[in-house]
Length: 297
Image (cartoon, rainbow, N blue to C red; front, side, top):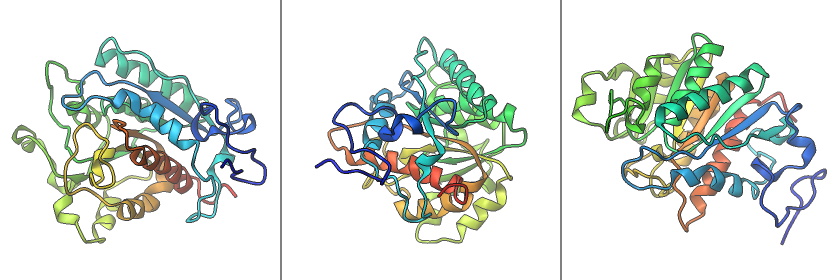
């Protein structure tokens, strides 16, 4: 049954969603929107399970079924205006894709919009951080991920998804949370004071204070969905057991949310199970609720 999600919104349509949240035109107008959603359906360097190129559309499709009132923050983030851009289609090489993402994100930042990048594989983050670091000097990057992604190059490219945080670290200080898989070669360059391994934070909450202490007043978040445990997020290209739970993740994000200057959600590889698609869409909406808490009704 189709139902209205708010007093001033029409019932959900059976047609494909008109951007994130399937919002009425008044809330997805480019000129008025404070949030820009940028799909990047790129899956050129993933090394095991393919399908991350279908992730952005799966998130958009699932977002049409969100209830737009957020209970926790008592707010409706859609009222900010959420404009969904055309997908970044550059796929000739990872380097070219990174440049295209950088240009797209930079354009939205210059226009005063808050950027939300939907991957695609994790390599898309390098382009987003390039733009954000130039627009917000001194930004720090919070990475939620199962993998360190600190190889200098992999399979012939320094822009492989396994190298993304090596590229990001060249632009801004990073803090890594949820890590539980890495190559021995990455160990030498790892700053252990800025890594929160999944096995060491499991069942605790004091680690969140440690994360916050390492971040600056402006934060870019890169959220690889394999940071979450496969029991709730099986639809990734490189699933790892022992990941973060939903509520401990939200506890961290709620405390850092107001510092965000942009974020990405990457590595969804959709399957017949649609629950992970909805989780990813809900995560995006929760992050907007945390970021703009107090600014929206």
